[in-house]
Image 1 (tube, one colour):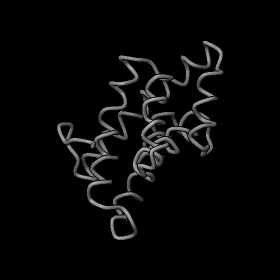
Image 2 (cartoon, helix red, strand yellow):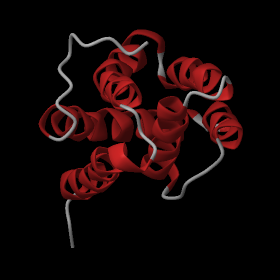
Image 3 (tube, one colour):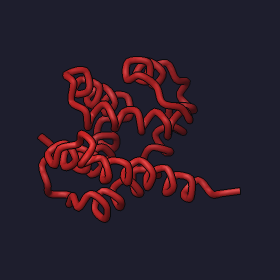
Image 4 (cartoon, rainbow, N blue to C red):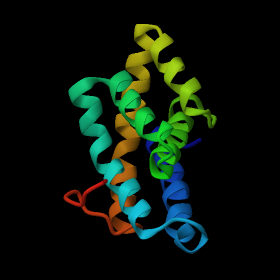
Length: 133
């Protein structure tokens, strides 16, 4: 049995290594930087505004067709619910959660965010100061 940290590490590595390999398969350097910058910024958004507002912010960008934001939300939905969801369904799920479930989801996201940030630096070569737009 794996710890939650090990599960998050494995998941983050799988997600980000696919992105780092996909530069030749449809991910531009700019999109890769946007995704990496989002890995750095999202935990701050959650801490300042809460999970629901942070997901709403990313959903707006995803609805505008920005691939890094769409991909990030899919990855986030896997962390929270264990399966990939469309961003509208995922956003509704977050808004409908009971308080205890919402707090648990927030903690899971923040715990996983550590790994996403680490792999964004090591695999995508994106530092905290890089812009996302």
